[in-house]
Image 1: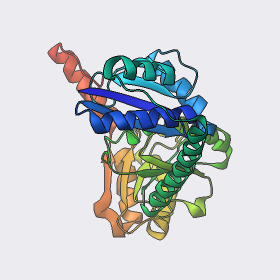
Image 2: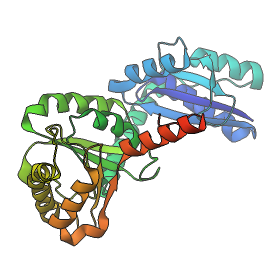
Image 3: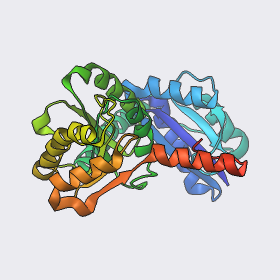
Length: 305
């Protein structure tokens, strides 16, 4: 089985000519398969540069054609551009293309219009799919930075669940959050439908399906249980009120961090009584320390150490 990938700028005449030749070969040769990719002219150069950098190829023009040794997505073997593909077809299959330059240009414009229409349909369909709204509190803290790639990988909510992430924190952190948003968009995760920032308390947890509560960066060291409770009550009372007021009816709340996780969980249950069954605590720091201590005792290694 011979599998080729034909990629090009949507308005490229040479892509149009190569496409017609590839379609002919696929129709007439049982062991010839082609996968076609078009990119809008505005994004073609960047897409091509990223592709060549990833595969360590040197190619500058449209189209680019490579042979896949495995199934689509596997490591490819670069063939070249239109001229190399035409030579390959002549040498191995005795087939050439007689398409005129005028016809190439006509088909190229048709390809561009088709590509634009397809993108519009995809965008419209995307708007119809309601993503899972995930809110992260204290989003300027370091754990949030490391948490985001995990959430967008598909390992947490599933490989077919699109998510929308909202970063919630104080107004003074907005500049940092903007930088974080830019980095999130660079992830180019197919599951990340949108990312936004919220610094207005009254808007917090709007239509949230999942809320991840991290350690508040204003947490201060306390020495007595009374001080501890007193320091957490106002924030948990506020969060509880906002969750019940703004969040989705089936919201799930995950309380994480290293400081007073169980206490914050109990307080949230008190101040958000309608969703107590959907609030859980995840004391990752304590768990990791316990695993590391046990690993040292057993003279082995721990992934959490």
